[in-house]
Image 1 (cartoon, rainbow, N blue to C red):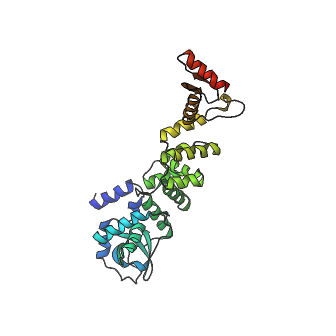
Image 2: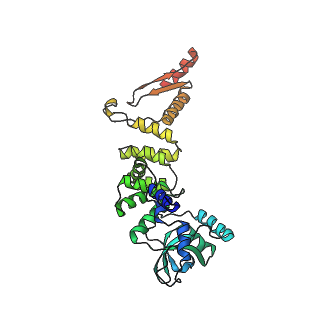
Image 3: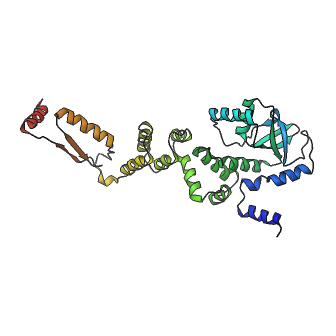
Length: 307
């Protein structure tokens, strides 16, 4: 078997991911050596060219909606100093008109850096390929947030007619991972925004998804944000909120917060001028213990009760 056949076999074995959609650099250079038309033509494919930025329009299938401005400025400064290290990828749609397939951050940063032209791989692709390449290229980025990944998975499934197992093979993830991301889209919009803005993590989000009662879910979400709960702290609170209703008084479920219990204990200690301990279960039942070391301390407690 020739080395070229072995390489093709390896690509097939890896699944039809981004590497199978974009030709490797050897093929790009081979195509370039075979000749190409000028920027005004339509026949050149898989070529690397210096293209004026004004000729490039953004990808309408770009799944990413939010770009951190500080990171863009940092990339722009790097481009000013070192230039474009990794070319973008575009398709030619008309004379002097190209459409971005991948590399929008590099394109935007190049504009900020004041570049006039940008190196780009030029290829032909139909709309279906455009969607798939743009989505997979973005999913494989490390800095894509969990909501953007989930939305990209959803679009790949809907617009490219993929099942979850097929999608997993395309993006190199198992089905359970894909499912966990997709479930994020069932959360209320404001919680999705918190995930997007890195106010809560993927671990926090997975805990909140398991809470079916929307009021309790909202309470736990607000506590997580305001008190900067860890994932483990939220998991404990979720387990407490899931106590069966049969264990609760007829008035309904009571969610006991450890911080509240400590606060009440402190207030009682201050009131009685004696150490107080509180214990309470999820049903609202418990005990209060007042500790005194002498008859005088007991009299003070009684005086506080009678006042």
